[in-house]
Length: 135
Image 1: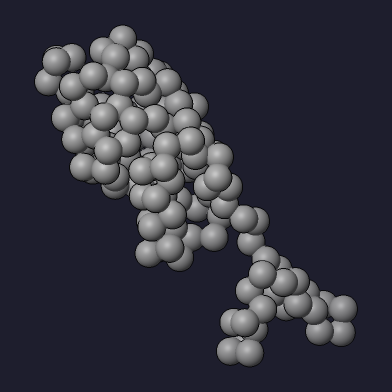
Image 2: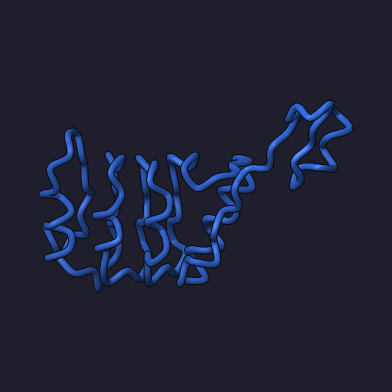
């Protein structure tokens, strides 16, 4: 199997039987905010996650993130920490069905209406740490 490491992007078969099938590419280019994209790319690389559906935790604090557009492809995200960024809206998080913990502290321009809507979503065990101005 060590020989297959150089073939990670290819389907490999032996006697017409699949030995290796490439994972679908993560569409990080769909992430609009460059700072969020960089954080996601670093997390995927560090954790060696090949598919969007496999990412369950994301910590992007103090990253200068302004927009979460594109994050909706990571449907299995359960824990997110966006503390101390420059977020103004978080509607994208409504589309993440597995979400259980979100830290939004330190985002002074964040829409409190968005935060309240997020916190009120009918999801068992969802904890939303709100920015100080929304408490």
